[in-house]
Length: 181
Picture 1: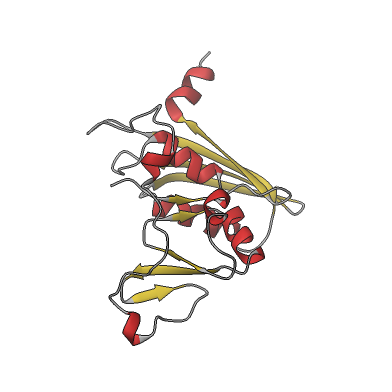
Picture 2: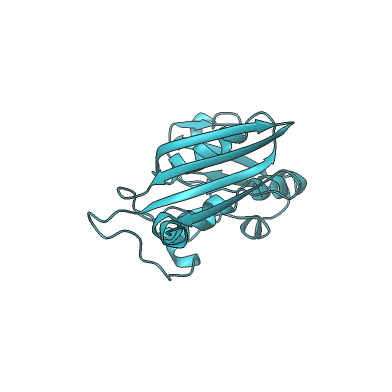
């Protein structure tokens, strides 16, 4: 099952002061959240049909179980370039994520939440704080996730925010080949 990614461009398709329902497994980029707030669009995170979570109130009883009348995003695979088909069954798909930026509460949570929503497994993680800035390196295994490298890269790099932090993602095989002596 391909993961959905909601970007700032997707938010632009909504009417101001409307609502976006983000279902389990969907990644919404921080810039999309910022744009939604600027346009007065309410964002609801839903664990399942019965339990919305996040900054919104629970659904009224009459709305429970009913599908919201909101635009539906096409699967991420339909919106993203298909230059990589993901990891064939049994093949490893490991990526190296680096993030650098100003330290603030919630940075690590944002990044690891996005990884979890893509069904990635954090194999190793290193973080260093230097005078109010953080440096983060994460090794992520997507071998058992149903996500392509390109989809994961776009979703994770979409977390980057100007003046906040920057995320880069590289395939581990490419990284090892580049740094071989």
